[in-house]
Image (cartoon, rainbow, N blue to C red; front, side, top):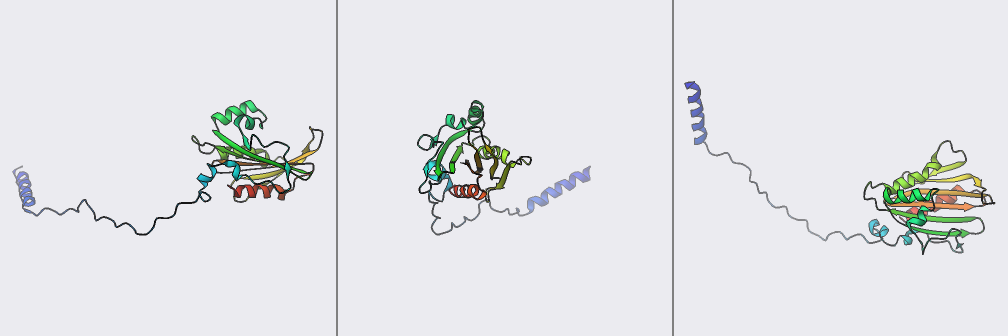
Length: 223
């Protein structure tokens, strides 16, 4: 035991006689800030957040030259409130609750027109708050796509909308006859950020693929 104690004491004395070990200083040389002008902020046209938080109606496609007023009626001055939008569903009361609680509906802009005697077009841009899940627009668009992409639905032809991820367009091959006339329809659903796009086309003849895809592509470019 005396040997152990003596060795400990000697080791302590040796450490006391040594120069203190130098440690790196806590402070470091300041980094020189880069010189030059800061990048210019994005313009309103380039900043998508500014664009979609503005007047949503301005992002809708313009009516073609010579087009007539649509059959559906483009909401109140181009807007659809929650009640009007819920009325477009098969079960409006349930849709109203779902859009309010689950999907965080914010607003919807709409335009429609007629071309010649064949086509009636309606386009909606539906915006969601996306404060809870952050996927409300995608969920709504995907729900609209369900009928179009069902493999067993041989009465419908569907195509992806280029550059939109899961966006889909479809044309229904069988006409709706409950209104006393054979009415064909086509539709397109896609989203970008918190905005869902819906395109609806009606006519007395089958809607060509090129028609629905062209409208969907041009409308998505506006977003």
